[in-house]
Image 1 (cartoon, one colour):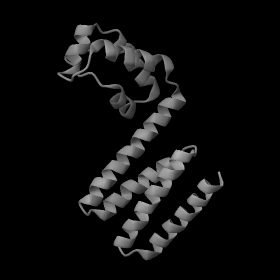
Image 2 (image 1 turned 180 degrees about the vertical axis):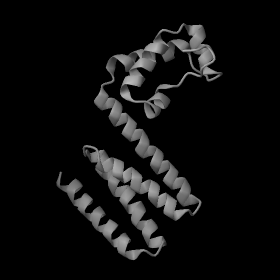
Image 3 (image 1 turned 30 degrees about the vertical axis):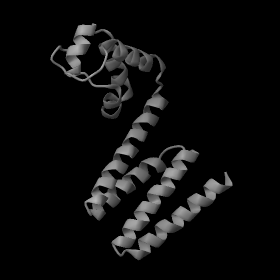
Amino acid sequence: MKKDTELKLPDQMLREMQYEDFKAGCINILELDNEEIEASLRGRECNPEDVRRQYKKLYETITPEEFNRQKKEYEVNSRIKQGNELYKSKNLSEALEQFNKALDILDSTKDDAEQEELKVNLSNDTSFIYMEMKNYEMAIKVCNKVLYLTIRIDIS
């Protein structure tokens, strides 16, 4: 890593890299001395030793499965945040698009109770947007999905 390169924090590396590149990036950071880490942080308030410990722990413990799970979780949260901001600015169709992309990501992952509840909440949000857009047919379809998801949660 060049001295004038800004150090990417783990969450930034997680969302921008593939697993192999992430592991290689961790190794590169672990090879830096404290002065190089500090310079790479570019004024962010982080202790170089804490940064090194964090990367070492990630390097030693993160599996490809966990890496992909965290990457998807970040992507879902990012889409939800963007969707909420777009909704607040009354950009309903783009908000809907972000929420639907988040739902697509959730649908592609293994279900757990937390994800199921998030799907219900996101689906509620999308049905509300469809109603605001006066697309009642889609609002009803999404509400039916919410009922189905809610029944699945209650049964398990």
